[in-house]
Image (tube, rainbow, N blue to C red; front, side):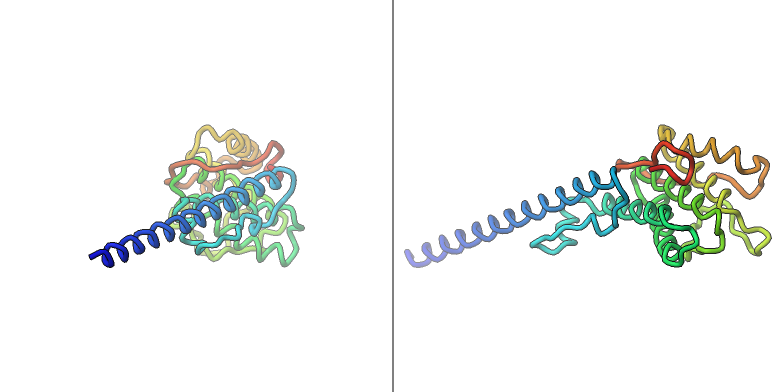
Length: 227
């Protein structure tokens, strides 16, 4: 009888030790992710950063830790914005910029439609508009494989293809609809309205569907340079 009690006590102690170790590892990984995101945000305010900046070295499986912390959406937003800024700051005719723009455009477009955070989705749409505007000097350089089912325009022939300015106008309009308090998007929309013919039938703000909060936003200069 005493032997059974002793075995049970040992088992309970072993379980408690295991749980303690797991919690300690989780706390370590949470601290690592928090540090990585704060550091990345601070660096991004002074200069363009790589999407890889928002990475952390963890003890436990990365996916498990991110799910526990609920940061996947925040990371997706930050990485997409970092990619977009990197493209905008490069020469618009650079081949490497073209390839990166496909990735950045696709990531941002998905965020505008799938992110349940309206504030974050709005900022993603604003950055997407800036990305389109940056491509205006070489509109044929980048063709994203991502087709948004909610886009108002789905051209069937080259004569109906929207210009980078029109695409930018559409995204700025969407950004304002998603978050009417987005001052940067409002300013960019107003500026683009002066550049795109107001009677164009090919331009209209597409619908969005997001909800909840993120970080960042365009800066205070003309479209294409909002950093």
